[in-house]
Length: 202
Ligand SMILES: Cc1ncc(COP(=O)(O)OP(=O)(O)O)c(N)n1
Ligand SMILES: Cc1nc(C(=O)O)sc1CCOP(=O)(O)O
Ligand SMILES: [Mg+2]
Image (tube, rainbow, N blue to C red):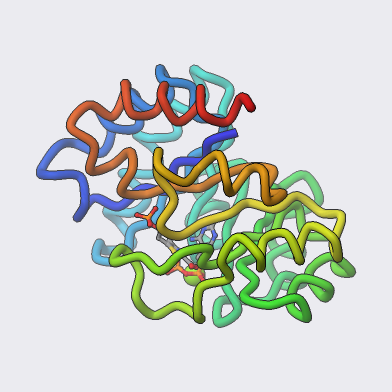
C-alpha cells in the first residue's frame, strides 16, 4: 500500500487538495496531512477540505502531530513521533477506533510500540532524505529486515523512498511505504502514484 504524507512546501506551488485528489485517483491507500507551517485554524480548514475527498474514496485520513485537530475534523487517525504526545494519551483522547501510528527509530522503540498495541509503526528513516533532516540515522534495508524479524505489527517504511528503491523496501519486509516528495513533487502526481502502486505488486 502507498501512504501519501503531504507537504505543501514541496508541492511546487500546486494546490494540496488537487495533489491529494490525484494521488487518490492513482490508488493511495492512506493519506497523512502533515503541515508544519500553518496556523491551527488553517490546519482545520485544510483538514476538512482534504477529508471530504478522502471520504469519497473511503481512504483513511491521518493527521500528523495534532490530536486536537484529528478530533475536531473527525479524521480516522493520528501519526505521532517519539517527541509528540504519548501513544497512551493519544488513544485516550481519540478512542479505540482511531488508527494511531508511531514513528520508531530503533528496535527497542519498535518493541515498546508493539507492546502498546499501536496500529502501525513508521520505520524512520529508511534512507536519508532532504524532506526531513531532523531524523535519526537511516535504518537502511537491513534495518527494515531486522524490524520485520522482531515485531509482528504493521511496518510503514518512510524516508527517501521512490520508484528506484520501493521494491527493495517491500522485499525487506515493509507492509506499506510512505512517501512525500515522490508524489507531492512529481510532475504528474497521478501517474507517479500509479507507478508506485504498481511497483508494490511484486
Ligand atoms: C508514516 C510516518 N512515519 C514517520 C513520520 C515522522 O513522524 P515524526 O517523527 O513525529 O516527525 P514529523 O513528521 O512530525 O516531523 C511520519 N510523519 N509519518
Ligand atoms: C515525514 C518524514 N518522516 C521521516 C522520518 O524519518 O521520520 S522522513 C519523512 C519525509 C519523507 O519524505 P520523502 O518521501 O520525500 O523522502
Ligand atoms: Mg511528529
